[in-house]
Length: 639
Image (tube, rainbow, N blue to C red; front, side):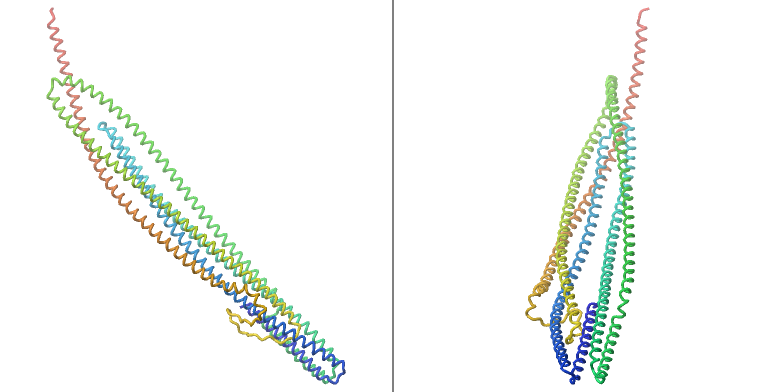
């Protein structure tokens, strides 16, 4: 709009100057017609003036034709410029929409990655629990029939292991909370970054707008300086014309001189009117340049300082977020190290308990050997006491039956452990398949992102080509404007008819003058550019359709994969529940077996006590018999 207003001002000034010059020449021609009584010298001067006026009129007509052709070219270039500007705006809007879609897809991918990490973490927890249960089963199967101290030590170790498990579960829950906090911090960090990027883009747009305003103000100041120069040139020309008129008036009689003075007054009034119009529309041009630059410069400097402060604040906030993340990471790594050290300590305790268990088994083996020796000795003594032996044999047979039952129960427990191991292997296979599916899903997502990046690069190249075309057209436009200004400078000192043009023009459509056939070849390239715009729109529509189909297919694939993952998770949950039920049943069976083992050990202790009492009795009887035989022998010896 500012450019059109400047054009209208130039055209009005040009028309007023032409009218003033024509009026001056008309006045001179009238004065020359009144001076017919002068000599032949005056007639020759009049003829030469008329010829000069006709030549000036012819030159003015030629310049008007050239001006019309140039104005027609300018209108065509302006129409092309508007079309290309609309195409560039469409491309920019499409790029913005695509960037928004890419950001949404990245957010969805982050959510899916977080869900997969949570699932893998729960799987690891369950696998660790299953391994702990298996270790407890293996430790319970090696439980010996004898030794109450070993039983107490095992109970203490079980209590310690339970406490360690409780601590581990607490720490695992704390780690889960820390992981959730880290994920929230990461989301907040990404949101802050996106907000900062948006603010930076808005500030860049503001800077561009300020630069555009600055360029417009500079152009206005340059136009004002050009108007001042034109005003000075016109004033100099007017003074020259006045001098010529004064020199011609001196050779004119007084009656005609009065008429010329009246006409001069009229011309002076018209010049004053033109100056008043220029003062109203443009203002005082001499002091305008100094008043335009300083407030503009101060505003631009203030805006740049504000932008620098905002960027410094954003950088400081980013540094604070990075330091907080580092502190959280260090604390998490320290806690993990502490957990590892505690696990190593528990493993050392378990190894020590195993060594103690081996020593106890050795002592039990030595005790069994001693009991066998004692049983051999008792066998020699039990010949006299068959009844007691029969009772002992019946008790031992019942004990062996119970031991066989215990062995059968142990075999069943081993079978259940084998089945649990198979189930654990199946769960590991399921976990591996989930990991593979996750890897394939990540590969697919990365491939889709690469495709989107390539498509964005292609669109950027097309956008850059359009920008290059736009810059070329702007250069042509500037060259034509310079040519038009040169023609206007050429038209100012000569005589010619004023060019009539329409004052009211639309903003989007420019009036096109008819062009002769000689100038048509120069505009073929511009027509090709105009014809290429619908092809670009068709290509853009096709690309949008392809992108929509591609995104819909990807969304369908993602939904199918999510459904598969949900089904697998449901199966895994059902398997984990069934395994937990089996573990509960096996724990109950173990408790029952432990109670039976305790009863058997109590009976064995009672039998050992009875055996020791009988041995003492037999020893006392043997001692009494030996004493009796010794007394009999002493009595039987001769005196």
